[in-house]
Image (cartoon, rainbow over all chains, first blue to last red; front, side):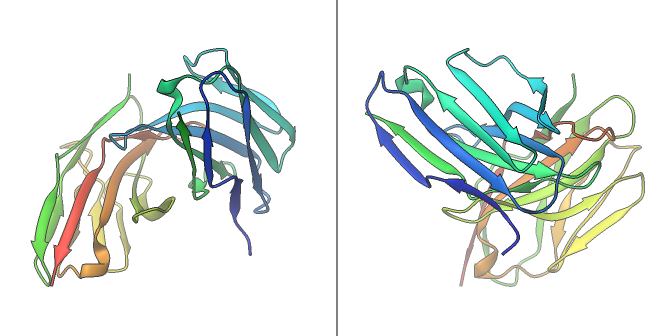
Length: 111
Length: 113
């Protein structure tokens, strides 16, 4: 299937831990994004990469570090997890000015 | 900066009722406008889009028209079904490649039979 796929779908972990979320797209897109959806469903951009180059870096704590090993992958590493990091994280991708395609999200819960 | 304002929900309708979800935007230049839908427990799916003034986007019986004079992109459907129950997001992006979507706060639609 052609898609944007994220792993894991659910992530439950303790405060203070470090965790990673992976994203892969096989759509041939050149830009990938991370969005955060809070408990009120509000969606906000965190980062975007175009051809492995960081182009958007919103005001996000530096505990969050994106990494793009190639055009098809964009991972998100989070250090020292805090309660406020609990959210749904969505990966998306696009090609030039075409609409963005979203993954199914990673539901992160911090205990 | 650019922003999107949607009507607050939840919106509760009976099956076959008419649906309108209001969306207005503030943007410099000529943004592209979108409606995305999020079904329970799922990711966002593109519902429809419009890239210039007076364009009408349509899909699955939903329609929205890009109105530059009123900076609006209201979502409508003539007859909703139970399966339309979801959260609907209005969004915009500038017409430069690779720019982020700016979302409204989302409107929850609940349709009962």
